[in-house]
Every structure is written in C-alpha cells, then in structure tokens.
Image 1 (cartoon, rainbow, N blue to C red):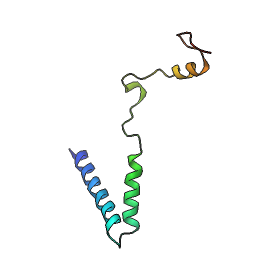
Image 2 (cartoon, rainbow, N blue to C red):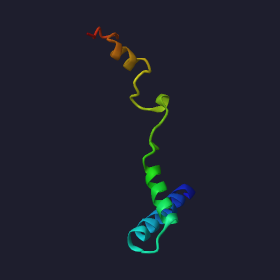
Image 3 (spheres, rainbow, N blue to C red):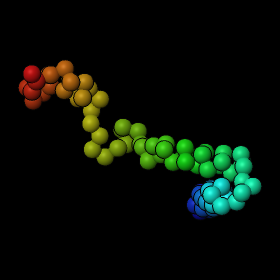
Image 4 (cartoon, one colour):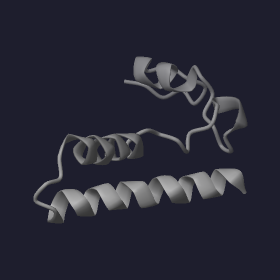
Amino acid sequence: MVGWIARVLLGVVWWWAALRLAVAPDAGVVEGAVVAGGWGLSLLPVHCVPRAGAAGAVALGRWREAWRGGGARGGGG
C-alpha cells in the first residue's frame, strides 16, 4: 500500500511539473529537472526479472551457439 501511494504521489509531482513547464511562463530549472528525471526513469527496464525467475527464459549459451552456427539442432551455415 505504501509503495502504491508513493508512486501516485511521484506521478502527481511529475504531472504538476510537466504542466507547469508547459503553461507557466516562470517555470524553471526545478520543473525541468523533475520532468527530465521522471522521463529518464521511465526508460529503465523496471519490469525485468533475473533470468532464473523469468518464464520461458532461454539458456545462457543458446544464443552464443546459434551465432557460431552450432547447436543441438544441427543448424548452421
């Protein structure tokens, strides 16, 4: 519950800064920093999980073998 409230509050602060930056003529560095920081955080892969916990994760060496042309399926060029 606390995490949800914190996310809502941070979202409200971000929207306040974004609207103020777009509308208010006296908006400045603080609003710009909040908007840029929030946008930058949105680019982080926060939905990633460790490979061991991911459903349907590919084994570590599988892609390496595929690029080299080997593998269990006998593929390759």
